Image (cartoon, rainbow over all chains, first blue to last red; front, side, top):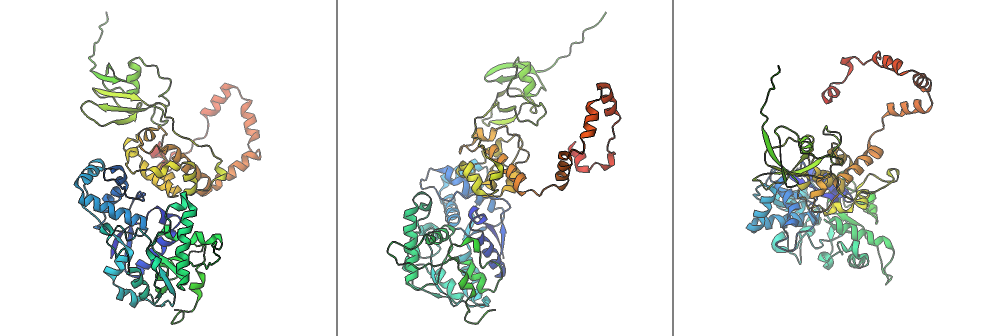
Length: 290
Length: 243
């Protein structure tokens, strides 16, 4: 199946590993991600005020361009997913917003279904099919981490239960992983506070990593470039003040998928990790190396 | 006895900075300005559509749209309202190109305002060169320097994009930075240029230059007239097209 694909700026830059591993794993599962012929920043956030129409222009322009390529649009960055999906919802549900945006863009908007690769795997490929294509089952102990924007606000995103989601757990079990019970999985990593108040973001991120470490998880798996960045980067600054500290590598969900599917590409991006996940990829797996 | 031939030249109304003038139909905006008595010191340059000095904003009667053009390339229309934008005080950074890396961090450090872009596309709508300004800014902001350089290659730096930008981005100066980064750090080196520069610095042509400097103007003119010219068929087709 062919799905129009919006990478977003971060996947072009600091999170190029997520882009690369998503493309190769999707291809291996029979999904061709067709990058939009031209695209620009989605704006990163949806305006919190109904009348702030200017803030809707960036995501609306992407959606208007995407509808020329198909009836849905796949994206991977959690910020892009949240922004585009909510913009689509506003344009569909609020006639005044749609009228103003269409008027300014001088284009009609008919609606594009914004999807995340995780939901395509769940709803279209199917967990059984993913499980059957695994050639290298992973005996990892994994903490799934969702963060905020992949699930919230539920009324507008509707991907999974915002308080106790299971889509990532279901996905990881298909790969053979043992999934730990991880109550911090929907806590906030500190988000953009890593720029303006790094001490706060560091505290948020470290608490999440330490809670994962206490469960015995060997790795945290996430979908979001900013969560990956915050959780990973703030570990490199040495032990916490209470002295209890164990580093945990942070992977994008597509990396274990690439490894489990037996792919050579899309597994490990040495320059994108401060806490190296390398030992995960060199440990023997349940059925040995493929 | 001579007969004066009177030819009727149709006159049209143009409003220059709000004042009405009657000028002959068919003039460019630049010529209309001069016909009306303006002596242009700024807002004029090459008169051939290349230098970008004569950016002009205009509106046609009965239309809300603000349109733009180069005064030397745009023909006046009846009831046109216009003004020139000879200079725009946009932010322009100084830097040592050797010290910069061709990536997003460089762009964001020198021109952080690019992240304020709302994708309104006004910059593209006003570009007299019809460049995809919004997308070269997007390319620059995500570190795709080669694409930003390519998309902005025909920029004349007239500044109209910046004059209309709600995010106050200095598009044309970002574009200049992108092209400099591309030229210095990304474009493959041209071996023939390096070789020729070495020949020049080693003084291989000093003798010929000295001989020429000693010639009289008449001798130089003769030399010029008798010079070897590349045969026509050796000129690449694309080059001919450009000429």
